[in-house]
Length: 111
Length: 116
Image 1 (cartoon, each protein chain N blue to C red):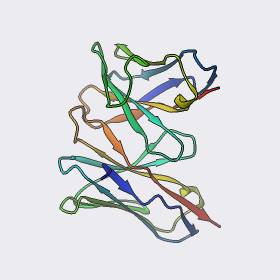
Image 2: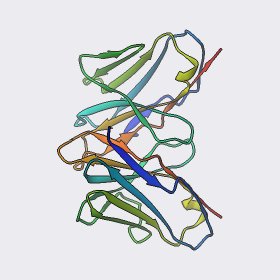
Image 3: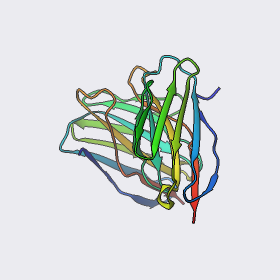
């Protein structure tokens, strides 16, 4: 089983749509969770951290279920500029605290 | 905010030559530097972790004699791909962590290496 698994997509949605991404992780000792965004041929950029209580940042909502080892990201009212690959990232399972990346889910928002 | 400057952004080299990639932390001390590699349509995979002044710790399957990492100062870490081959062509990216920040990571902008 891969450490961090995501649906690779692509998700092709019209502007204004709501889209949800899911992610599962295998290491129950993981301590921190993030969603990153990666544009083509660019470095990943932190979108938001994910907390057990759930957190929202504008049109973006992230949820964490530690019991199920499941993370989600919801994007409401999607914009053309949301087109990117969304990476589920987990940290804290290793001794050095390195980040472990999922393969990413590609989102394409169409006019 | 914290910035990591990574150079070069793109390099094409001949098979058998060596390539050095630099990552410099600006305005903060990078006590730990993570080096990742990303092949097309794949996830970022950790290659090695280096702490300033110590030898790097390599992930399983990553040849330490081929991928030389130097982290001699708190603001500079380098990755040298020695005797590069076409299969080393990839996107290499560093990520620095500041002293005292457990999960505060700053990424470099990445280096796209093509070996011909």
